[in-house]
Amino acid sequence: MKKKIFILKNGLKLIAIQRKKLPIAYIKLIVRSGAINEPLSRKGLSYLTAKLLNEGTKGKDSTAFAREVEKLGGNLTSKSGYSISTIEGDSLSDKFEALTGLMKELLTEAAFREKDLSRLKKQIKTAFLLRMQDPNYLSLYYFTKFMYKDYPPLSTLPEGTPESIEKIKRNEIIKFFKDHYTPTNSFIVVVSDIGGDRIEEIMQRTLSGWIKEAIEKPKLEQFPDVTAPTLYIVDMDVTQSHIKIGKHSISRANPDYNSLRVANYILGGSDFSSRLMRKIRIEKGFAYSVYSSITPGYPTEPQPLRGSFYISMETSTKNTRKAFDLLMKEVKKFSMEGPSEEELKDAKSYYHGNIPLRSETYEQLAVLAMDEELFGLPWKHWIKDVEEIERLNRTKVQEAASKYLNLERYVAVIVGNAQKLLPQFKDLNPEVIKPGFI
Image 1 (cartoon, rainbow, N blue to C red):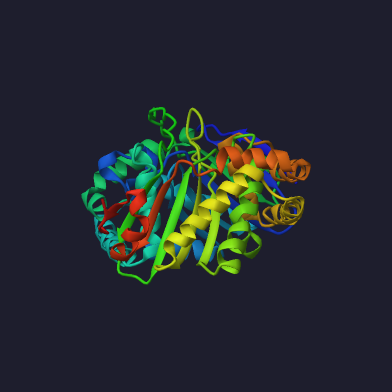
Image 2 (cartoon, one colour):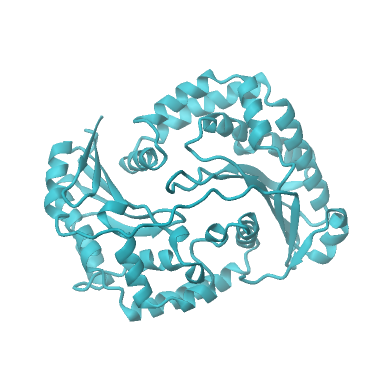
């Protein structure tokens, strides 16, 4: 496997990875802008921009454009998240130049039709109404809202809200696209069986007409820590309580990341073998599901913004406080004592087998190469991750758990029957929220 890096004449950085396994080419354009770069009054602007890119170009509507992609036996789709947006797809290697030509057509001839915008707005608003009936979605929505209440760019999910989506105009979408989808605000990853020099030749030729100057984006400051334990109860007449509790953590670029991912795996990231699942569900029967997660953060400039650590749990209404207290007890114990030798051995075995599987497909390799560029990781970092994890000892993992997994300060959201939950949590002074997009 070979990696070559080029800078095209239009300023676009090209990362070409040759893997002689299958006659396939996977292409991924990464734009270094997303929801975090929107005006606060227009949340969902980046999301709508990406959705509209899937609706075709000035010369081809969505059906005609999709038909052109299908002729190549490939696919091409656009997405947007908090800090990046992507256009990505694949085809057989001998159709790669044609696929790249269609990507260039999206970048230079995007239509952003008013009728498509109106239709998408209706679809999104209908989806919002359905989500309001889903306690899992509500727990994520409000957890995000209150986790980042002092940092508005991250306090709303990338799709925005019904109110913010309705305000967005076609000319605002065109401006966001013009300002952010530029060669110097982007880079592109190609994974294929084609040599890097040949890929560079194709890209120079097909993307030569994509020339735009990027705007200067404001530098983003790191968001503040959670300062105290806070609990919110979102009132919903359901028989189960849906809980999310967590705090800010570290980014993928932090040297402690592998220690943290192992600590999280042992605590709650390993399904039925995790501490939380074993203690709360299997031994006590207090929860239907419980797991913990860490996020890699947000690749922004001048440095990545931190990720988060959070725990999700579903339990019956009557057992909510018991499950909550046991969760807090187990997290505290683990952050103080760390893992057993057996738990650490099992975690190492898992990552030894699992991490290499994440580089099996061309798409997976493109994602790994993207992460290297976004977070400043070394080439083939996944191999180095396995080696680093193998060297970890209990002390190192316990230090990471103590530093990043303790929940002395937290944001907690419980979606459930407030009338029945309030007496259980009166001592924690919860704030009761009525469901609705805010």
